[in-house]
Structures are given as C-alpha cells and as structure tokens.
Length: 202
Image (cartoon, rainbow, N blue to C red; front, side, top):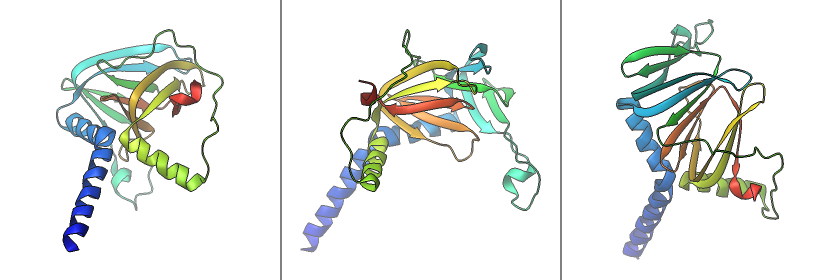
C-alpha cells in the first residue's frame, strides 16, 4: 500500500513539474540568465504620444532598480526610488518616467496588425474561483496570448503574440511586467497594456 502511495505521489510531482516546466521553468531559466550574464535586447523608449524617441541595443543587458535607503529601510520616511538602472555592455543608463519596452532579440511586434476594439469571452466559464485557478495553471504552463501595448496616454504602440506565453510581475522592479513569449523575454515598463487569450479575438 505504501509503495502505491509513494508511486502515486511521485507521479503527481512529475506531472506538476512537467506542467509548470513548460513556460514557468523556461521563464525562471531566462531570468537567471538575465540576472547573471544579460541577454540580447532591443530597448525601445516611447513618449506619451507613442512615438519612439530612443532605441538601444546590446549583447549584454541587465535591468535593476537604482535603490536608495527608503527601498530597504521600512522605517525610513523618504520616497522610494523608482529609477531603473540599465546596464548595456558594461555601460550604465538610468531611466524614469518613459514607456520602455525591452524585447529580446528575435521577438518582434506583429506587423500590420490592426489593434482590436472588440473581443468576445465566448460561452465558457462557470464557477469563477475555479476558472481563476484553471487560468493560473494554464498561465504557468503557457497560453496563446495577444499583448496590446499603448503609451501612458492610451495611444497604441504595437502588438505582440505568442503560442506559449507566461506572465509575471517582478517584485524588485517598479511598474514592470515581464513576459516569456515562446521562449523569448519581454519587459514592459510604464505602459498601458492589455494581455488576453488570443481566442477572445477570433
């Protein structure tokens, strides 16, 4: 009996690891790679009118928070820093306030894509807590998603799509969302965006 229980638990662990391993583990590996040695990114900076004002490329790029004492001292009454520190091939760059998209080399916006103004939720769904639980699991595995990015004034910038998309919000980077799209990393900083299941646009 004990052997059957152990075998069953082992099977559950393997299945859970394989499920989380699709997008979730790839994302974790990419994040470790980014933290240690950097990744090849194209950094695009946009103003409030969705006009690109700067593009930076590099083979070794990492992103972090330029911290002050208020970031790590809870008793410090000062204002926490939200300045992003970007290292590009060993050179330093600071950024605050602009909309910035960090797209790993090979991850491009969809060309000639008309930004949708309507979407349908279909006829699925049922018990909301269960639906949220299922969607969370699917997000860990990776879902077919469409990402619509706009400037802080709501003017469309562009669209990304992927068959295997994992979404997370870094705890150590302010106003930043990180996605793994078909194995490539995408950071969205200070932007309006909508991330939805692509089937809602069919």
